[in-house]
Length: 165
Image (tube, rainbow, N blue to C red; front, side, top):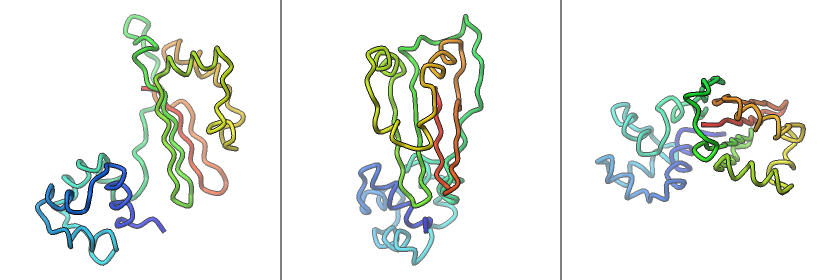
C-alpha cells in the first residue's frame, strides 16, 4: 500500500535529503519526519504546501499519490514552435506495486537515436509501450504537438504517460 508516509520517504530519498535535512527545512524535529514516514502520524496541514514544494510535487500528489495530469496535447503555431533541441521527451511509468520509472531525454537525442536505429530495451520491453510508433510521435512533435501525447493504463493498474514539453 502506498501511504502518505511512504510517499514522503520515497520523495525525500529521490531528492537525496536526510530526515534531518527535511526536518530543518520545515522547522520540525527529525522525530516528526520519522513518525510521518512510519505512518504513526501525519504532517500538520499547514506544513503541506511547503512539504510538497520541497519534495517537488503538488499537495494533491502528496496526499493522493497520483501524479498531476500533464497538459493535454496542444498544437503550437509554426511561428511559436521551439526547435527539437529545446524540447524534452518524457516517459513516466507508475506500476500498481509502487515502482516508478522516469525517462527524460532531450527530444533531439531521441531523434538521433531513432535515425541510428538504436534499440531502447528499457522502453520496448514494456508491454504497454511495445506497439507505440516512435516515428509517428516524433512527426507529431515536428508538426507542433506538445503535451500529453500518449497515456496507457494496463488492466493490472500500471500507467504509462508519454509527453513532450
